[in-house]
Length: 243
Image (cartoon, rainbow, N blue to C red; front, side, top):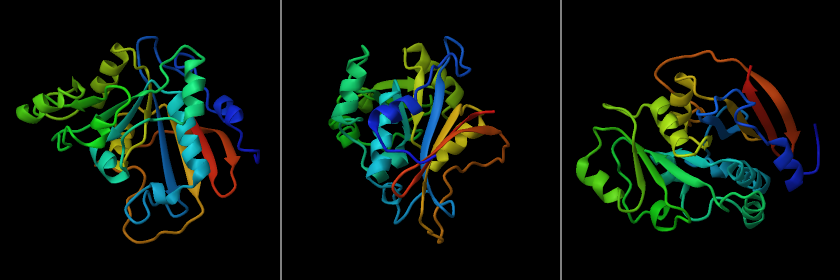
């Protein structure tokens, strides 16, 4: 459908009740938001942000405003320049008017803990971030990051995303929005942890060697159903849910 890109309309279009959507009262609900070129590329010139436009950025803020926590991979944090406030001022007010903190929290998934404590993701955070890692994470780096973030140990040898989402839910962070990158999206899909997928389809052909929006070592087949398709000025905004 084609419709004016109105903030109130978008909030209504992307509203979700975690329990009604199929999650248990004590479980996390995981929505993934990605942008893709027409030929399936996740990035243009090395970044996903170059595929989007102002409406895509506005929708990202709306989606974040519905989440308790925004979950991202460490590579995406570095490549896309994460840091500072998560949502626009209007969306922060929307959250506050509903009795929620003005900003959602951020969580980064990292096995090797390569991010430095002084990275803007930590240094400019409006709310204390979380670091999701495994028990094999380098002890010194874990202790350094524990000074600037809450550390969630999920898994012994590597990060177990099912355990990670359960740990987040146990902290009251049940509505999870993942923004990738492709490795994290692929891992969530492989573990069958994806409840919804929101895709911004950008009218661009990229070719080259850019990654798909989801990559993993194992092929899966999880069926979803189309909830809506909203036509923007240039982009097509798609929302899918578990079939």
